Image (cartoon, rainbow, N blue to C red; front, side, top):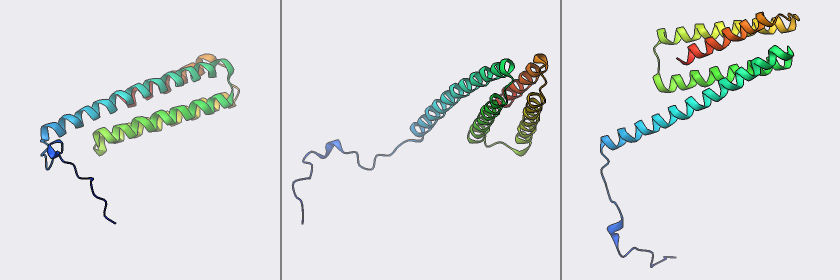
Length: 143
């Protein structure tokens, strides 16, 4: 069955075979990258704020479940930073190795924090010190 009457009488509204210039494509790509970067930066800042709040809670409660939540937030942060970094930079191996070393150090510090809480070490200064080291390393990864 053929449906008729669907043809447009005025074809001036259609753009046929319009050539898109590289400048327009580059401009669009840059805008998309900037938008992605701004949103990513905002999300990372919010995640860091959540990590700081959870760290403060750990100092007050010294509760193992808070440490687990803290570790999960740190993992989310690192995954996000490293995924975004890979997408934006497509880094070389030497550049990546610096970040992997930092991530390993963060993992060790998280384990140290967990051990302190589980071992009932109630020294607030020691716990705060470990939390500060972890947060400093996370900021280093982002830079």
